[in-house]
Image (cartoon, rainbow, N blue to C red):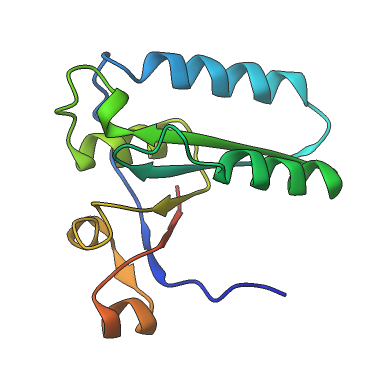
Length: 136
């Protein structure tokens, strides 16, 4: 069963800061290079204080079960540099590195709305976004 997506789409411009994001970028490249002949999907969870999230392990296990290299990375603002990274920078980073989509959690579910090109009817109605589809 597919979940209903409450979100929007974004065509981000890349303005990348060096602090805190380099290790995520290296991890992404390593995982992509390890599975060259497999369908690959790269997604991330944006939030604060999410280092203990079980979401990446659950999604990656489901991807493996379906024969998909499902790469799921935490984009935790608290763990990036001095913790003052802006949401715009995280979205730009994700767009620049070819993320296919993002899940959004605390505290960004409303803050991300002005950065999106369009919203689903559900996201508009509740004024909150859970999922962002990134389009080149």
